[in-house]
Amino acid sequence: MAIHYRHELDRVFHALGDGKRRAMLGLVARRGSCTAGELGEPFAISQPTTSKHLRVLESAGLVERRVEGRVHRFRLVPKRLTRAERWIVRHRSLWEGALERLEAYLEGEDE
Image (cartoon, rainbow, N blue to C red; front, side, top):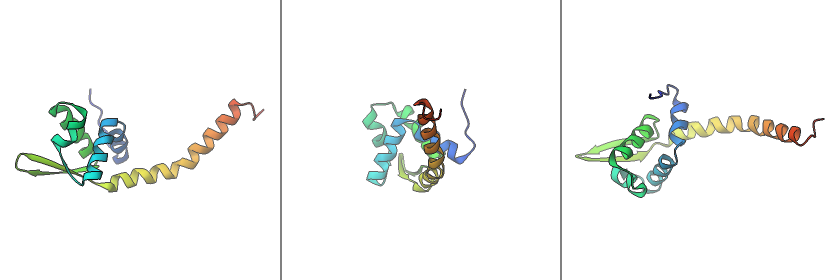
C-alpha cells in the first residue's frame, strides 16, 4: 500500500530519508545536472528502481526534470531544501533542551 504525503515538508523529509536519494541529490548538486542513467549508475540498480527514486525526489520538489528526446536530465531545486533547513533550525533548540533534560534525568541529576 502506497503512502501519499500531502504536506510539502513531509514529501521532502520522506525523500531525504533514503540514502540513495540523498546521494543522487549530492551528484546533481555537484554536477549541475545529470541524466537518469548517471544517477542510477553508482548504485548498480535497475532503471525502474532509479526512476522510482527520481519520481520521489521530483514529487518532493527537490529536482526538476527536463526531457531532451529520450534523455531525461535532472537538476537540483534548492528552495525545498532551504525550507526543510529552516524547519530544522526552528525546532533545534526545542530538541536540544529536551535531550539535555532527558540526559540529566537519566543521570539522576533531577532528583
